[in-house]
Length: 200
Image (cartoon, rainbow, N blue to C red; front, side, top):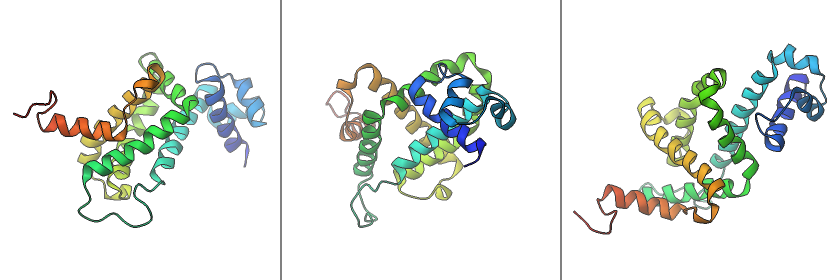
């Protein structure tokens, strides 16, 4: 790798070990083996590099979930229950959330910085639609290219809201985390008007 790639990898390591706001330029230099001047040369500033680090880390984390099959070696039948797939995919996300707490902590930290950091807000806002598209693709088991803009906007936003909430909950009360089955049951009960156990 060149210095640019080394710096990004170093920044991603610092993100997990020290957090977004707690990482200094010297931390990144120590983690990457590059020199201090190379941060400005390749990224313009430490903050710009850290913005790239949080985006790259998030993309890699999501890609890791997307690569894990949800139903064995055989392709799912065309009439597979959508709620069963919904539950299975959420179980994959929930497993990652439970075992990668440093990454989750960094994500939640960044959420708290957004109202006061316009550059960070803009950088994440630019990739947010792509993230929604990727989530829809994962849950539907299709390539990103098959996800239309409306599905990415509406359904992708729904998945992003659930994922963000689950990340926060995992740090606050991990003992109350739902399972994929719980989430599927909740969705079914809400859409059927049976939240309180009573049909309409």
